[in-house]
Image (cartoon, rainbow, N blue to C red; front, side, top):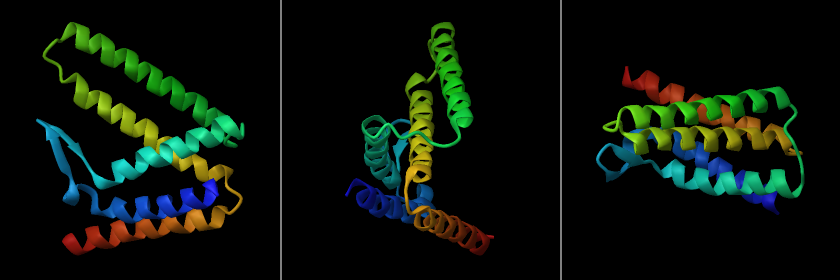
Length: 138
């Protein structure tokens, strides 16, 4: 049940992804949210539940380990930079780190699915759509 919900939301996420910044919503000064961020948060909770409840781990443990080190060092750097430079825009930088973590967790989840072909096809379709839209803009 949860895998089917993830695939449906994942498809919606990938279809919303090519819209990019066209449909962004301004929250405050320099802080914007795009529609796929709302879907991404739901997908993040589903993938987190899957990793905790089922105790399934992605095959590439080394990537996850290095990614966690990267996020850890980024967080430490963010805290140090906000202490040294109080005028630093802490919230905007924090949101970029959160978005990176959420997106990475979402794209690790299909590695644990039984039907990986469908998830791979959706990612290919979304990437192709982005390429086609960008080629038409030029």
